[in-house]
Figure 1 (cartoon, helix red, strand yellow):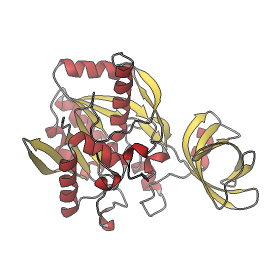
Figure 2 (cartoon, one colour; figure 1 turned 60 degrees about the horizontal axis):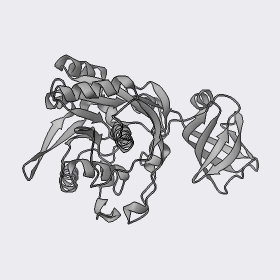
Figure 3 (cartoon, rainbow, N blue to C red; figure 1 turned 135 degrees about the vertical axis):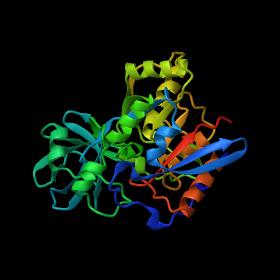
Figure 4 (cartoon, rainbow, N blue to C red; figure 1 turned 30 degrees about the vertical axis):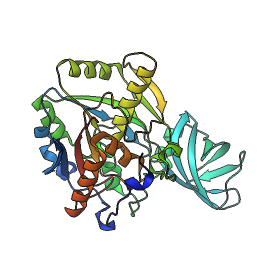
Length: 349
């Protein structure tokens, strides 16, 4: 039985990437392969990826688009607040995090960006419901700020507004980027297509809860945040076709992984085959999980003690991931959202 401490490691602060590279695909790629009982760690460039994937394999991307979800404002008393949208719940309503010296009560109003007022609705622990005077998307995009992760120290600038967004983003609703997708540019996507690699998209709107730490040593006590996802019928068909030709399904990022595995797990529980769906998921993948869809995973390096580190450990094996992270630190890989990437293969126990 693994505990929270099993997923801790010491990361030199200077390895936390603070800015994006000049070229999206200029990052490094650590390929982790298992050869018998031996873990092979292959240092590559991300531009090597087409040569690591076979024609006929299927890449699944998350096409969510990051909102300008951070809003500054004040309470009626004049006290300063910071609002971070967690998710949109309607055209004019959202669930949010609020940072304030004192929690605003239900029924009170907040003035945001010195431009408009919102009404505080019911509490949805640990979040709040806010009601907007006009469509949320319009107000957020006009007055909000890009919500860079808490470990990136600078305020977002014009470069971040481009680079903290994938080139294939099209469905607004996320408050954090699906960062494995940030490495892909149009040239690399075209190269993959020319090689015969299939491509598909789903949508999972990444919530601010993705940065919430695990606070319980017993992993069973951790409650995951819930996120909305949509699996289109076209993707279900592509997965079936990939299986039929004996090729592999490759998730681009842990968000694509979570959507695929949540849909497959829930369909199996209902005694049904994988099908198109739109649903909420709070799936928590830890070592011992049985993967149903994904064969390989492209992902960035994750925070110590994070649910995503647990996920990749479940997928590629705890010992191989520990070895990979030790290697990455020794070789000065760049970590987290703007950092380098890994290519993992599922290890079934």
